[in-house]
Image 1 (cartoon, rainbow, N blue to C red):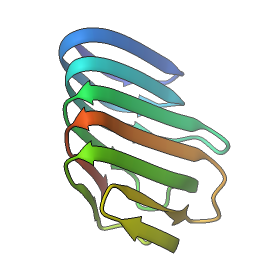
Image 2: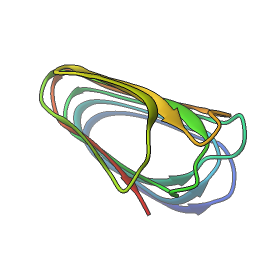
Image 3: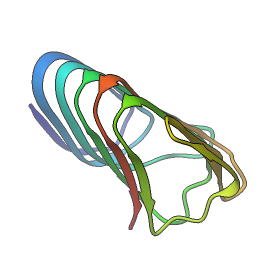
Length: 122
């Protein structure tokens, strides 16, 4: 499933497969049972990105000037951030949290069983 060029809030529920969300400008919720979430989202002030997989990877691209409190957790997998500055970073093997900019939104990412999470600033 692919959603592209949406200037509004988005909610995706999918059992299996890949959800590709590109050029999304709004709060975004995506829940996938078995599969991958690939997303490029511009988060509005006080917006929320909430993405969860049971088994699968989450690849999120956000602007480098995003303002949000970020939390990411995995059970079996890795968490990687690229080209982002996290203030007050807390990083343990299964968990990462920190603040992007002034923290005016929320980003919550979770792979509940097996999966990797990558968050990239663009």
